[in-house]
Length: 324
Image (cartoon, rainbow, N blue to C red):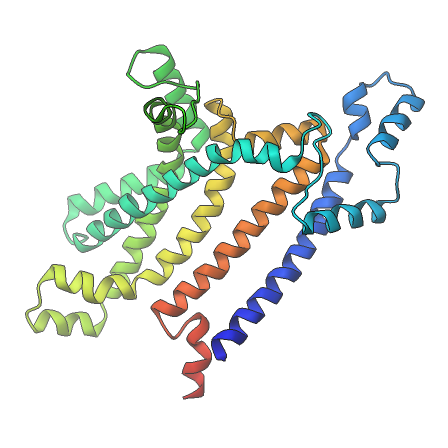
């Protein structure tokens, strides 16, 4: 019952948050300088022409009516029609989502498979000067170098010299897995540098905090092996901040994919939304930002649930702890 009430509160909070986000999205898209008619027809169009275009797409209606129509159709899964291509927004997103999803999954996998082990390794060997210095330097560089700078360098090097990997020329995974891998390795690697560095640094700090706890000293006194101590005592107790940063990193990956898709000429959702902003394609912009908000809220909820499962003092187990 306690778990059900926790999920119910989180669901209600998510609904309210999404409702407020939808208002902000709709208002922000309409407040952008230059409307759809001005962008499509150009600065020399007559008022009659602009009025005709606005009436064709329902932009001449009251702003509250426009918002209500968009919200009610969005709740049914219909995000409208792209005013530029004339295709349903869901169809356009479906064509581009695999690219962004592939980049995001690759970055998340790199954070778990490389960032977490690297953070644990540098923490365990923190007392050895050279290892600690190299770890701090690597994580500092990874966090400090902007992805557009690193991406530009990678694009130049692999475009200028024949280094075995291609820049651009995206091929879907279903058509040619080998060519898809060659075209996605570089953008995924550039996107992963920051997340690996942040995950490694967060894991290192969390593990160092746990290593000074009395129960770790007791485990060492009992003669337990370092590997057993790390896997049995350290990892679970250090996992809360790591899980939290991983959820934040996923949101960063969705945003960072926009820059990477532009640099490497990938037909993903991020670059499509940016193009829609420039063209004032309201339906695409509103749907893209709303879906990103849904992903972020779901990830935060799952993170809280995972934190409660890993440590009863957090999340869903907090009330149980206070009731005892």
